[in-house]
Length: 263
Image (cartoon, rainbow, N blue to C red; front, side, top):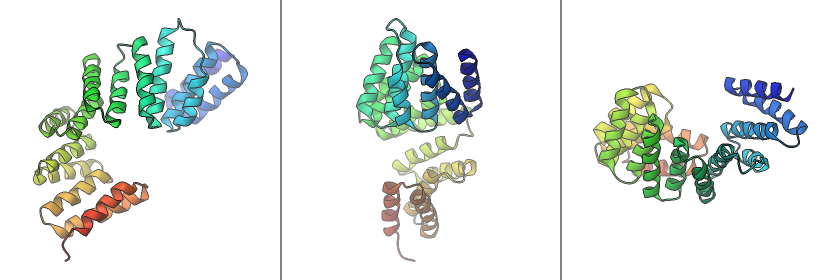
């Protein structure tokens, strides 16, 4: 009966019906006080909570999991999930510690390094973040990891390297809007606003509501002295940032608009 429920929960999870999967896993957790089935249900429910952006609930479940020290693979996954959960909670030091424990048990897991890189970057350790991204790529080459490396290079001020990586991604994945956004940001930081505008327009063709593209479009138009178009784009970006509760970015846009010449 329990195995049947586990199978049903896994099926709902694979379909993307996370509330249904959570409901089934909850039945198992309530009915089974200990053992592997309970651990599977706790981990499954935690994964669903993470996908639904509920890391606090995920952490509660992960802390209830009880594995034997000999179950190294399962313990490794537990610490990996704990690291991801702490990352979502923006608890970067705790996240890194969890990933470090996972690394001892799952040293060949590429996702471990790519996720720990985010924690390192968020805590300001850009060198460690770069090392982890390169380690992840040595184990498994994915577009998302290359993309994260490009973003890291932009944040580090290595704009030429950032542009090169993004151009390579575009050559194989030309329909990913955010890659054009990042390349446009690199170009803008180098003062190449014509190239930035080209990339932002490409991004908006793929994703018309991309607020980063709209915002940089306005900033690049302002840099080129095209005040009317700049104001229109910045006003749209400001409205989107405000609606999303992104107050810091909203304030940046207002400051940029205040510097525009009066018409």
